[in-house]
Image 1 (cartoon, rainbow, N blue to C red):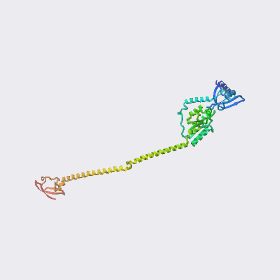
Image 2: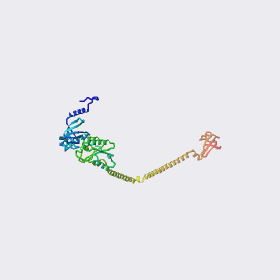
Image 3: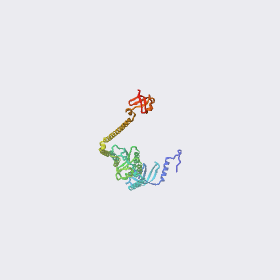
Image 4: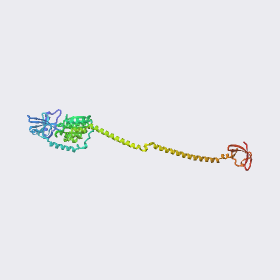
Length: 415
């Protein structure tokens, strides 16, 4: 039931703490799973104080148990152990703190862990988080590599040394985090998110050396698996040795058997790439030279053909044909002109022979009246004493008619 309070009628802190305690006292006992981060036995008090932490979140709670509850598992439990506790929530009113009063503590065995991991693997696989089509290809030559690993660890040295030995110019963004224990999961998740948001990081390597199944449990945590699945940057899993296979290996874009293998898979070897470039360059040179030799041989073969061996011969042949045709045309035209000239000469001779001038050349004359120029053809056309114009081959003169007879007229020259 909600309390009615106001600025004028507040309730004291002790009352609030007592109310919270009364509500928590009504809660029943619960089974809680977590990882022990602190273990403080108090022999004189007969109690043991534990700090139980959620492996997937930055949340912890204090647990108090009697020696009778702790002693049966005392030899098996140590900081970092994963346990299941049957406890009842308690509220310490004077300090306002919440804790758990444990009535039973069970160590999570290896069989239980493996069974839970297998169930989680099936669940995440059914969601498609391990599907091959989700895998992103790694860049051929990453300019900057994000590395999530333990501080000053062998895994960090292996990755840095082998990567820089293969490609000296490669750069790293290193995030040193706990790689086992209760704080590993949240810090690894934070490091992955930071590197995923980094604008220059091209690929992220999560590396850790070998260890027991319990040591590698953080890399099978569901929250970590989902964080890697949501990352936009390709992630490489390099956890433990070849037989080790945490769930991170299945969701990562590439699984490397060891941290050293991760460096070799992510960074190309500069010597190998130079050798490949030289080999490709030599191959290209041989291919071009072979093509040039083949084209030169083909060109030489074409040049041996008559058309190219003596290219002017075709022009000379055509020029000879042109000259022959010109000469033939000239002869034909000359013959036709000669024949036409002969025909013209004969026609001219005939015309001259038939012309009045030719008749006059033979001694004939043409008489014309001086009055109108009419030609006199008969004696009856003239009269005695009439003047006529006589036209001969060499000129003309005037004559006078003296006598007219039937056979012809007689005339005497006046001029």
